[in-house]
Length: 154
Image (cartoon, rainbow, N blue to C red; front, side, top):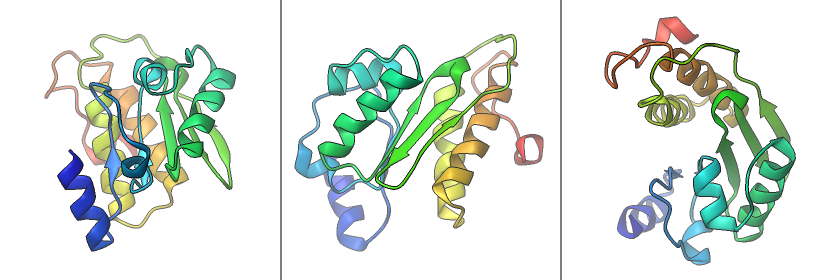
């Protein structure tokens, strides 16, 4: 992980880190990230703050921002995702659905987020698409079968 982040930083390539499973990450490495995307459990392990609602997610995001990350997106399952950086805070709410299988939700979220950022969408637009895609993914059983096609979440 360290080598990949270092190489991306040296090349000027934005690096999005999904810290799963969460481990200790040095501040100098965090400062090289464009974005970090922990879920509630990973955010607690990285910050010591239990993420139980939007307010606690904001506090956890602040800890990561103070440690040098430029953008923090905390995924919160059926509560959507919180995007926070120096300029904005936005809670992207998830549509209320009955989950069938959450296995691929995180991978779907991060894949859509990275693709959207890579295509030049704003981080706020990318998070909104990622939340929509992850919400669709939990409605179908199976890790691969549940990943929606782009036309399904745009």
